[in-house]
Image (cartoon, rainbow, N blue to C red; front, top):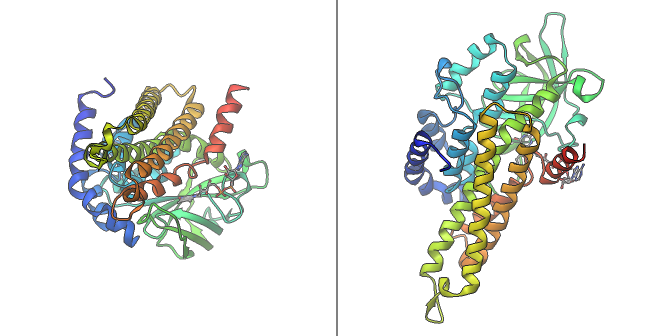
Length: 380
Ligand SMILES: Cc1cc2nc3c(=O)[nH]c(=O)nc-3n(C[C@H](O)[C@H](O)[C@H](O)COP(=O)(O)OP(=O)(O)OC[C@H]3O[C@@H](n4cnc5c(N)ncnc54)[C@H](O)[C@@H]3O)c2cc1C
């Protein structure tokens, strides 16, 4: 049994919410590319933006496994919804829980716990994505303790709607592990500017923007963790969050697969349902095996990380992200094939699922970078 009773109850309650609130809007959000204000409200009320905020700070609590369950269930209907689900984890909750002071936790976690915040993370710049060490955004500290931030970031998910953004900036000139710091940047402060929206293939409704910092003055407590140690902090936070990207992809893959099983039982060709053809059965069998392997791997890795054993954190986080997102791409491509022309049609959700699946092979470290991390660990 993969889940305990509480986890099964969580999964079931989210499944029911998704059927009622997410599924009916999924195609329209994709078509119009509008930000889903309805989901923001529902998720905030149900504790789904802020899972992982401990109860002592007014949050619903949670751990990696429960966050992944929530992301998988929402992902079955919409990758956009799944990306919004547990939105505060990487941009706020994990950085504060792992590197924040008690004052910083008291300042932010109760607000997050009330479901009031949308957050974002800003690492990527026009000149650099994979190579975080080459970022140019810079923060300089004044004698008063305030920081002055200058620079530009690109492709930042939710930047247009975020209340607070975790920003990575250079604070020194030495090697990256000593010269990058991370800051919680409040977007209502002067000096923050939204640039152009990115035009993209999928995950519509989850806006991506360029952002600019023009002599933006940040309070001293905007710095999270030690000055100059933001790079290693960033890597730890990313590792802790990576399985959640896999969970979203697992949801997309499961959603596409479920539709395929149904379609194989209903679609008739040559007087038979296509599910009676061995060629189609083999496709379903391959998809089912990949899904099972992906699910067992993901939740096995979540259990290891939740146990507090982080001795293999970096490698297994990369494994889950890389393997499951690749599986989701394979399965959604095959799902379009099984649906034939209907798979290619915007009247059905398969082409959306295929477009959406692609992005998770690219973000949060490309899958080439993850193979590199795994290979490097194995040959160390
Ligand atoms: C929809 C979307 C949402 C995003 N959201 C955010 C966000 O919220 N915040 C944020 O900071 N960024 C975000 N990004 C940016 C994303 O994280 C980067 O695009 C990603 O890290 C890859 O960087 P790049 O695009 O610069 O590719 P590059 O780093 O230029 O890589 C290009 C190609 O080279 C390969 N490559 C690079 N280095 C190596 C190597 N050493 N060995 C082998 N191959 C290599 C890559 O795998 C890739 O195939 C988002 C991107 C997209 C598309």
